[in-house]
Image (cartoon, rainbow, N blue to C red; front, side, top):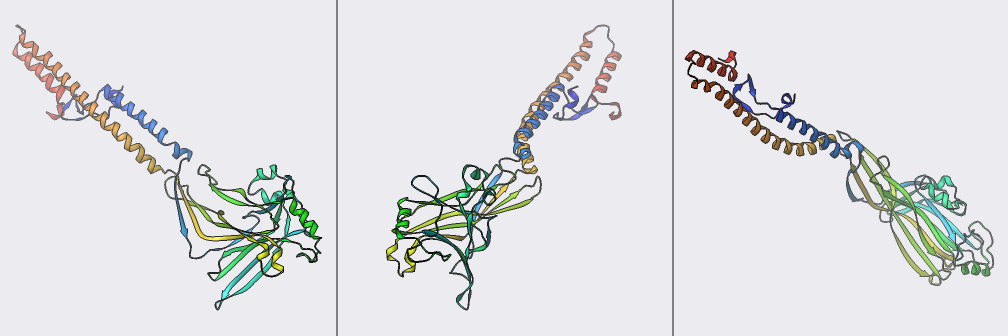
Length: 384
């Protein structure tokens, strides 16, 4: 039964038992072993191919000619503000003591000068889970979102004064000074109220999105997590914080045999910058009520991540390379064994036939008949 499975046998220069190839049961067993090895190789090396795991990842960073101008809204870019005190309690903003202005500005250069296209104040509203859950549902569960403030935005951000277009968003934290009015026209409360506010040593948290690459997530390789900058308010200092974001693009090659590309693109946090100045050094009466300025900026860096999953031809090459070694060794062993088995068969036939010469009563015709039997076993009749 195993003999018919032997495909490793060598070719003879003559016919034996009407066959040009030598086949043995031992060769059939080795053949079955190689088939088992093939299955194990496909099962072992094919884990990444069949389960779509452990892809190859290639990352690169490209510097664009200028920072791009991108559409930003509450669905693709997270911005939220939270104020805490030294006592660990959330602080409800009293705009007659301290207020926040979310100022959007865009301009385009014409004849060497910038012409303002838009200048407006964005509304700051109490955040809702709908504005947060797209980025991190767990965040809404562990935090009281109603204590957070979210700008309602549908704007463009990017560009630079060094190029032909700019679009910026700044959050200005201002003191409402006694005798003046806030941005809504409300009269400011006495200075003692602001002093009581700063005595609480308030801490400002500015929340934004940070984009992470999850190599093991087959369907959604890029995901956003919520991160924050923490700034302690000081009534004597003016703090400037710049937050910089860049484009991150994930290119997935999902093809099983041929290339099949799909892209995901997000804005991801890149870096931040800090600067601190004495408020008393500001020129002009109106500028001295600034407490803090947080600016949102887009850089001219673009990060590309190429994720390639194992293809069928790669698996075939890996399996074939290892199987070839087993085939080489198996062929040598089986060829040697089969030839040795053939020689033993010839020797047995010759010993059987030519031992008759020693018999006294055996005539020459019987010897000729036996010799003919030997020839018929080695060479079929149609080859005589």
